[in-house]
Image (cartoon, rainbow, N blue to C red; front, side):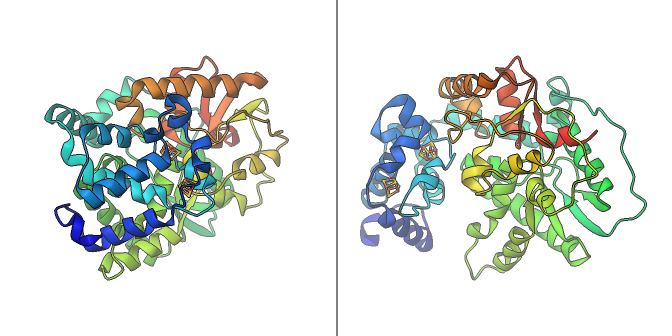
Length: 384
Ligand code: SF4
Ligand code: SF4
């Protein structure tokens, strides 16, 4: 196979990894039933199996067109197909390889547009003043201070979240203060690298990843026990850091350490006695992001925490299907994204909640755009 793909700009280990993933697919088609883009568009090439075929074809014959790239772009990277797949196909990893290979087909205008969007979102001195006018929520409570702390955690600040929804990490600081946990927040504007990574800007992504790994491992060696993420999209990216490096790379072991110490806020709170906390609203519906259920495999965890406070889990039709946010997807694939949001909001509103809560800033902002019901991060319910 390698003899046929020598013109493609991919390292031997990347090709080997892609081949291994492609060969693990038994073409059963089970994944088609749970793929949002196949459900909406009905085209096999907009399904996981179809995209695997396109990537295989690109690798084997160096043949891919702008149309192939469009099928890659339309994938939400929701990884619902991974949850369904009986053969354990690592579709998300293969997709990143496929996208990197096919990126060369992208036209100049589209490339420049994507570059500008990335730079606006990821450059704090540009994004902060613009984002201020699109702020979703303000800080609603006073910052509590704990006198006695018995452990220290690092709280991932994030790139857009501190500007658009500062109350999320503020609530976490207050909750952790009540639990006697000292919080060190990473500097505002820190990005996990996911946005660059998913838009095939691998060099920029890797720079951010290495910067984070250097800083976080230093903190971890000085007593920080856990890195907490309140955005599940960032959490899954950080947990996947080791996969970005060859085993021989000096960063590989450090990435493993960071990944092993990273927890979504739900994982962290699930291990604590929360009896001193209260819930501000019971009539809520929880939207479980793909990055929680398919990416981090933490399905059901948030609702089990909320149930300690009397919340009753509601059946939600198609709860495994993406809301259409998917990072920058909603900017570039507006039509599919809006349709998925409309479907999701209809399903979330069946029980007539007073509020929709979720675990990821991207889902939160995206859902709010189409919802008359307020949308918040679930931790905000606990800051009372
Ligand atoms: S990705 Fe998994 S579920 Fe989909 S066709 Fe291949 S083996 Fe079947
Ligand atoms: S990641 Fe999501 S959109 Fe992409 S192929 Fe899998 S199920 Fe479909």
